[in-house]
Image (cartoon, rainbow, N blue to C red; front, side, top):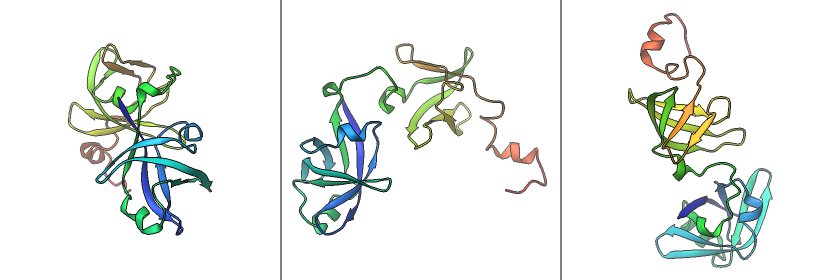
Length: 180
């Protein structure tokens, strides 16, 4: 199965380096010289890492196939993928494709479905579409999501009171006089 590990951002400098949005927990292992990525972009099928370096908190990549800024600009927005069959699974964590479409449950009650995983520097967030059609961001931490059962097709949650009501318009109506 293909797994997206990065999205190419804007060019950096004149020699073809690009910024990347990292979508993997192990960038130091993934983006090493010689690594080849499948590319979702018209006209380019693969890219080979020539060099990788950090500029503050931004990863910069140079590819053997991209030699100048103008060419780098043409691949902006391209997605980089690896084959998950080639990756050793350490058993820690989950990929987004494993979580999407799982039922979100509180006790035995289905309250929605997972629609996405948003990775962040501090913590990840599960995006859950509630049965009411609302999109709710749930911190993906063990105290709130104590169980992920891929085989059973669900995640079990113990959300804090109000998590699924906090952004509803009717909740705002219950607290008149409060301004954002």
